[in-house]
Structure formats: C-alpha cells, structure tokens
Image (cartoon, rainbow, N blue to C red; front, top):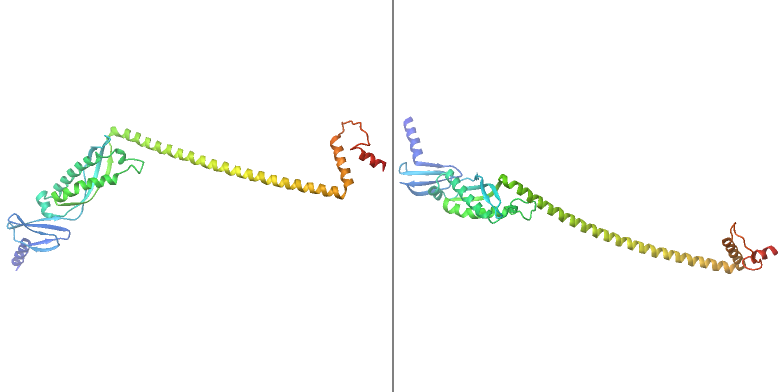
Length: 287
C-alpha cells in the first residue's frame, strides 16, 4: 500500500504541473514550446524528458539600476540612480531572450543607462536641480526615458515596465562648487526680483497715501474757509444788528476800542478832545 502511494506521488509530480497564483509557465515538448499557462491551477503534462516546464514569477518587481555617470546638455557631469517597476508579460519571449530574472535585470540596466545618456543630453543641469520650479523637468525626463525603453523591453524581453523614475542624483566632487554657484545665482535673481517688486509696491502705496493726504488737506482747507466765511458773515450780521439797535452805543464802544489800540502806558498824545475819537470822552465828561 505504501509503495502504491509513493508511486502515485512520484507520478503526480511528473505528470502534473501545479501553478501558483501570480506565476506563468512554458511547457516544451522535446524542446519545442507547445503551451503557455498563465492561470493558477494544476495542468497535465508528459513526464521528463518528453515535456519540460519553465515557471516564472510574473508579479511586479522593483529593480534599482546601477549608478551611472552621464553628461547634461550644458556639459555637467552627474551620477543617477534609477528605479524600475516591471513584470514578465510574455513568458515565451522572456524564456527565449533572457530566461532568468538576473539576466533580465542586467538587460534592463543596460537599456535604461543608454536611454538616460540620450535623454539627459537634451537637458541642462537646472532641469534636474533648481530652486525655480518652472525650470525643473524631472517628470518630463523620466517619461522620455520610460518611453525609450518600454517598447524595446516588451518586444525583445517579454517584459512590461510600468514605472521608471530617478531615485537619487549625485555629483562628482569637481561639480559641486559649480552647482552651489548656480544655486546662489538663482537665489540672487529671486532676491533682486522680490526687492524690485517691493520697491514698486512701496512707491504705489506712497503715491496713494500722498494723494489721500492731498485730498484730506483740500477738504480741510475748504471746510475751514466755509466755517470762517460763515463766522465772518455771522459777526457782520451781529455788528449790523448792534449798530441798528444802539447806534450811539455802538459808536461809543468802537471809539473806546480804537483808543485802546492806539494808546498804551508809554504813549503820549496831544490831541484835541473835540475831535474823534476823543470827542467821545469829552462828550461824556460834559454830560
């Protein structure tokens, strides 16, 4: 009984292919590919050496490329580390071209390195590193590198590249000072721009303030003139009414005011008392 079970187990292992979820397999018959299976489950096959099976993990993988040094359009040397998210889409092409994950990643590394050199030759360093967001074109650069390798990887390796990005950027030591100078120059441009805008805003605010002050002064002068005119008018009316109601008294008080203005304690006058304004006093004394 044990021998039968053991024989059955060996037979099962030789004629049944159990394919896990996320895997694909290529079945060859005397070395010729005859079947590609991509759905999980058990599959019947002839035992080896009639049939042979090649199983591949088709789940998504993350691969970090090697550091590669390249030149930008403005002849600046940079070192880039990229990452790729990829998976096997055509197991037969993958088997025939690279057959192993390590070989596939070596091929991808070479493709990406070549494409990075070509694409970055069209861009300046400040498209990768800049304090000005408008100059940065990292997304555009990544998209162009991806476009350059995606179709080749699919057709030649049976691989689909879903995402490609720049993970890290470094500089050779002799480039660091040049990069700092560039960043300082960009910051200086921003500072000059903000100072000019500040001066312009200050000038506008000052002009508006001066205009408002002039308006307030004009309105105040006009109001003061109106008040003074009304006061003078009212005073004239009071004097006129007083003159009407007490003409002699009005004349008398005005004469006294005139004498007060003309004379002080150090003044000496020799005048006739029967002439103005002293006739008023003379008349008063006679009475």
